[in-house]
Length: 201
Image (cartoon, rainbow, N blue to C red):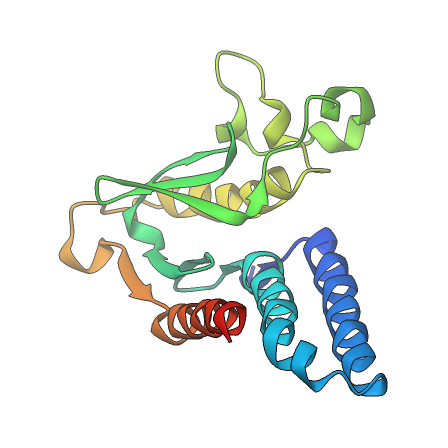
């Protein structure tokens, strides 16, 4: 069966980003409507930082499950993990992949809260074989959690590759690759500098 790529990005993060961005624009609009240009110059940057920071933390992070591997995009760094290099898929605190001696947590796929077990249905426990540890599964493995939904897709394909003998974690091409988000870091640093400059004007 052909592998279907999937992208996991929590709905909560997108809703929060839209709300915070709307509030930021409302605040900026308030300065403009009242003609408070001094206030706009002094404090408008804080509203921009609020909107951009929320997008950076809650909209942009994602788990991208592809045919050639898994891409974990966190706020300031992304990791590309080829399938053959993934050694462990865990969900204790968040979706965590171990590869090349590293443990890479996915910001976009946190584990469920302590209330998760109370909301589980039978279908939420239909997880892959490798999710069972000592005969049981963790709450973060449940399919109604961000970590569990992503982990289940990754595990099922990973198990197929494992059973076909295609996992080679020591191969050079199997090592995880990191990409630092220089632009995003630069924008945050720039906004913080402008915020601080506005306070001393």
